[in-house]
Length: 65
Image (cartoon, rainbow, N blue to C red):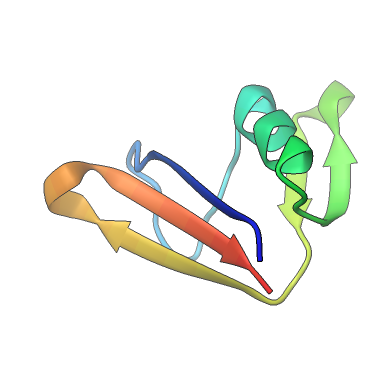
């Protein structure tokens, strides 16, 4: 199961906008994407995935099963 931790950067559980760098690192880690479109800055992770948000540490961990 791939897992990736990044800065929370004001994201919420409903919105998960990824940067190109984050999406690229996640793809290298084995994540599957429903949409990977750098030209339009659109990256959507395939479900199912789990989010763990730790506001005190400003971290977001994404795991995909």
